[in-house]
Amino acid sequence: MKRLLILLLAVPAAASAQPEAPLLQSRPDVLIRVRKSSVGADYVEIHMVREEYSRELLEAQCARVAEELSAGLRGLVVAERSLGDDPESRAGRVVYASFATDGVIVGNGVLRLLPFARAFAGAPEPHTVRTLAVVFEGVTPTPGVTLQAVDTPSATVRAQFDASLPQVEYRVSLKVQDPAQIDFPESAERQPSGGSVPSTERISVQTLALVAVGGVLAGVLVYFALRPGRHRGRRPESRRPRL
Image (tube, rainbow, N blue to C red):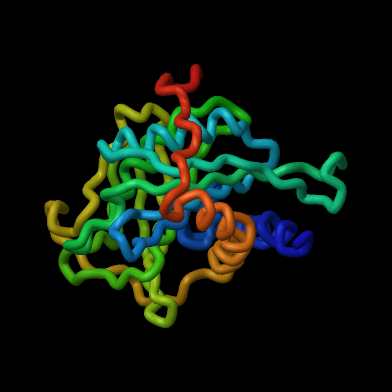
C-alpha cells in the first residue's frame, strides 16, 4: 500500500518535469473517476494529488458538483490516508471522496465535465486546482457527439480513448478561477466547427497509476456507502467555502 501511495505522487511528478509536456501528460491536481452503475446512478471517486488537502473544502466541492448537475448527493464519504506506515507520522496525508449522483454520464454520448471544473475552481492557495484529470470508465465515445478537444477563454479540454479498457480520459486546464466564468461545450455537436471522437492513443501511464491507486483507496468505501439499505452519508453544509 505504501508503494502505491508513493506512486500516486511520484509518477505524475516525473511527467510534469518534462519540458513543455502536453496537457494529456501533465500532472493533474485532482483525479476524478466516474462510472455508471447497473441501477443507473453515477459513482464518482475523487482523489486529491496534493498532500494535506482540506477535507472540509473537498466536502463542499463534492456538494457543488451535485448542485451543478441539479442532482442529489448520496452516500458521500470523505476520508484521508497517511502516506507512511505510521498514521501519526509526518509523511503527509492524501484526501479522497466518493459519492453517487446522476447525470454525469449521459446516455447519448455526452460526458459532463463542467460541473467538476466549476466545483473545483476558486479554491485559495495552497489548494488551488488548475488541472483536472477526469476518467470515465466503461465508456466508448460516440462519433460526432463525445467531445475531443476545445479551447475557450476559460479552459482547455483534451481527451483520449483507450479501447482496451475501455475508458475516456479528459484533462481540463483552467485558465480562470472564477466558477461563473468557466464555460465550454460538453459535446462535439455544440462546437461551432464540429468535433470528432477522442484520440485513440492509449491512456497515459501516469493516469493508469492514479486510477489503480484510487481503486485501492476508495473501492471498499464506495461499496459499503452505496449498497442498498444503507443510510445516506452526512450531507455537507450548502454554503460554499470562503475564498
